[in-house]
Amino acid sequence: MVHIVSSFQIFVISYYSVTDKSLADGRKFSLWKKLCHQKTGDGAFRFQKGRFFVSSGTLGQLIHTYRKKCGKSIADIKKETNISEKALRRLESDLTNHPKLETVEKVAKSLVIPFTEIVGKVVPIQKNQECVKEILIRVLPEASKSLLTEVVHQYVTLGQDVRKGLIDVLNIAEETNSISSAEKLYSVLGKHAMSYQECDIMAAAMFEEYLIARDKDMSNSYYLGKRLIEVSNFLTEENRVIAYYKVGVHALIIKKPYESNEFLGKIVLDSTIRDTVFKEKAYHAFYNNLIDIGDIDRADQFLEEYALKFNKYESSYYKIDKAIVYARRNDVGRAIPLLEKYLEDYEFHHNTIVAINELMQLYIKSNNMHEARKLYCFEEIVNKILESKNLKGPFNELYYGLYLRNKGRVEFLLGEVKNSVKALLGSMRIFAQLGLQQEFLESMELLYKLNATQVTGLYASGKSMIGIDSQLIITDLLNMVIQKGKRGL
Image 1: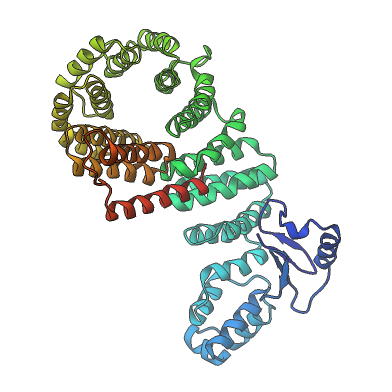
Image 2 (image 1 turned 30 degrees about the vertical axis):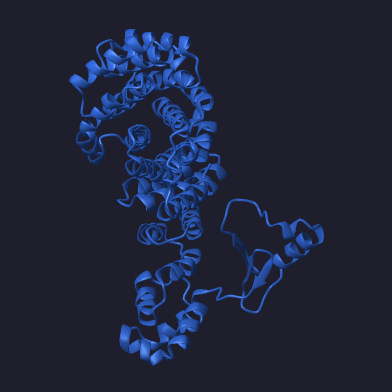
């Protein structure tokens, strides 16, 4: 967080308040306020993490600093840029009120000044809104959020209509080809719109920022989803439903079923919401959460309601989920035939991985390891499903990680210890990459339990199945999932 303080004005780079603990002392904060209004020799102070330091506060000072650093004279720059010495001296002396961007860029190229540094000095003195818009578009890929905050602030305040300026910035974010650039700009725009109490624009920016962050990293974006829900009343009805669904499914994936159904219930339990594709999907996720928390009767109730409302009795979702309900009621005799029948005519869809996982678990439960092993014949189609990316989000990878965990158990029970370790490490690697701590720990716990059986069990070999190489892999993966957890949830 950086605050630039000059004798004329304070540029607040971040819209968040100062939170540094060193300012908790009232005397220090009072001193800081006094210094904010104190004129300095070079016209500017910077404040960062409780300390002040002088910097090149103007465009001219920046050019002068880089010119001395490069060892070039005004005449040298004139030769390289074809800009007159008079214009160059005025520019370096800050006597040019509204320097042309083209002129400044030529000088910057000659002195190898990063464009982002130039922007930080040009934008505050630029009074042409279209010029600031051009700068915003050009600097967007490389700019920090702090710099974007300055540029957006200048663009919005130069126009007569702040709301129109905010909408223009929203359109720029929507039109950019770079996902990371769009994410940065949506983040900055959301804070600006909030400060101007343009709540619909704020919510629209937060909505887009969350969707991008969610696709990039599930483990590091859930807080953005919960923040979005807090302003969901300002979204359009369509986007509000999408927000509840996306955040609800996000919570499902990271094993927060109660929170998940709190959000999904806003769709499923609201009869005024039309039966759209997202309401259909919300039903499916809603009753699956009920299955996960063991509320099987209500899960079955909503499963039947889902099938009736959306005519899904012949769908793979209904067949697989009905089998899961039977399985949770220990009605294995009805669950296995349903899943076997589905796999006779499977879909090119993640449902197939779900069905394989459920059937493999039932075979393990029935002590039918050879039938479980026959399911390996589907691995080729599973790999093709993974490669196809036919579903946004981490569902395919999540279900494949669960498949490898089941496979590790089957291989161990069949005496293939090396294959078991390989499968379980593969499972842990997937969950670590996704930042799914609980799934990772469950796979790791299974590996160590099987190893304990291998070492000390009734028919134990007395030799650990986890070698040095495997231990190193586990350590690396554990560090990965811990770091993702620290950044995210």
